[in-house]
Image (cartoon, rainbow, N blue to C red; front, side, top):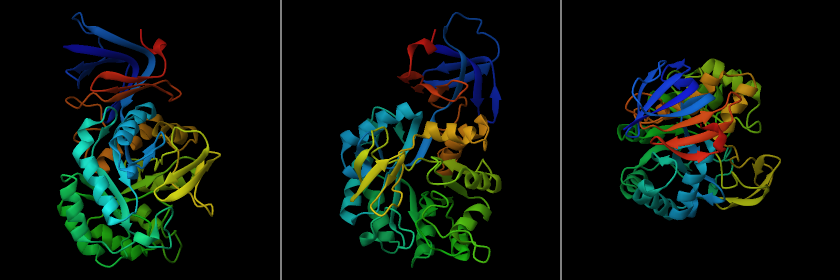
Length: 388
């Protein structure tokens, strides 16, 4: 049975259309047409609204007072459900640097339970650490830093039922080249992060297959005119994706604009790096083993360093448009299709295209989230009057 969505604007694969009608059949996207269907069918009327792909958050540690490292399925499920209010329909639960035993337990829990969550769909696991270096450690625990280990990765893959889809490393660590080559063969996206690498070290890692720079400008050697560093590599190397946290705290809007201009908005990925305080009031929370104070829209550990964020992905989309550095079409792409592409998942999410799961969001022209749909079913709605 088919239903049709009517709206003023549709952000389809590679183009923006509307007003018109989008078919949803058996939970999947069908055709788009400017003409009203001839047959008598159910039509959801979103006059005055826009339809966009469900957002894809490929870097998120927690939400609604739950953390991925809690190793608790109920918490994972609550994160999944909470993300629907952020416009997120697919995500990668993201770990932190921790003990091998703790990481073993967490990836096994996710690998055994990811199909059971009731909200946003889990598309894989992002291991952020422990293969980092100390100078740009951020809120990662240096007690567990070590060189990249194929043995550990193989164990994590086995425990997670081959569900590791992305892993971050510092490219200057011993054994990084061999590790990257192996991970890429296993179809794991290799990201570069928390690193004091030179431009040449980052370049070598990319030549071996690394393809993502994690939260660009944060946790990496900065751009200098005689040593471009990791930040320079993120902007200048070909065929890589650059994450960026657009909450107004991590990166100045002008720096975000520079990255988008040189990297290209088709290879810039909006992420949240959200921790458990996302969706919660100000106060004291945990990020891994560190207490975090959330105040004035920022999460910081003792000493003042930023510790993830409380950013919601829908707000990152809105921010870059409000800052005047992206059009709505570009902003939505950077939060849906680009992240899915960065982890090789654009064949199943991040687009409104025929045959894809009908995971989409409804926005007003101010880019406020009105509703979130999974498989053609409304799972979150801000207000009832949006549908007639």
